[in-house]
Image 1 (cartoon, rainbow, N blue to C red):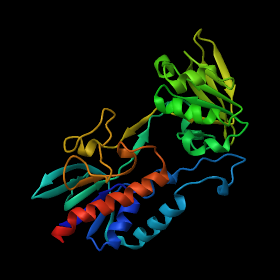
Image 2 (tube, rainbow, N blue to C red):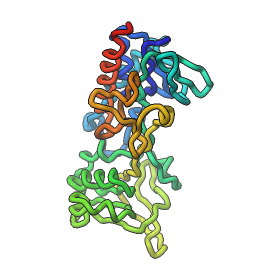
Image 3 (cartoon, rainbow, N blue to C red):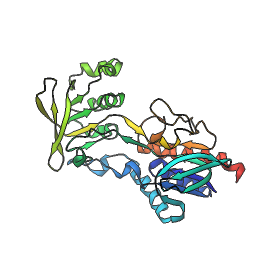
Length: 301
């Protein structure tokens, strides 16, 4: 039986694993890949590495350490987590069962995609899923935001503070019934394209324009320096949906030290109800979860 099993190899999971190893815990990291969302970086003609603040360097350092410590990681997707023998059983997709005294869930969230031609080809080449990460780079640039949820509203609001113009493809009038929504509807550099349907992302080496169908059925095209798909996030919490409490969006509910509703189960990063989906925040949450799990495990060591 392991002291601790960490599920997820993104910023939160990698950080938690390194902290747990340094606390001399018998730990195993279970993940289907290493690096998580930091494997994706937005490429644009004018962007230089030094202009972007991200947790990539920290995460890569932790990833390198774990790749060296082969005994501490296992590359496989997890199916579910159950209570067993006073601890927990983590069952993988191949039905391998691994037992631990405590578990950290750091499985992140996946973006809701548009599912249109060109989206896959231009992902991270002028089209991405996190305006909040890259907004400061778009001073005096034209941008497009696609989404009907609060995430799209927040992204449009942040871009509008620096961008020359923001086109927002949104069909949910209710989200504008807020201070930010009312401000954006009256902003001179924001155009809300209500009733428009995204049809295709077009470009060359980078995404250059979005083809849409307007409310009358006519096809129109808007050029932009970048496009941001902000259709909310789906947390990868299915493996513990019958074990811990989730919020209305399916995120794992945690307290200020990353404990879930079940003693011995901790969670960190985008899979939780914590604030903001940022790599550096996930790094900090992963460290907190590991320290919290260590405190829980200390009487059993």
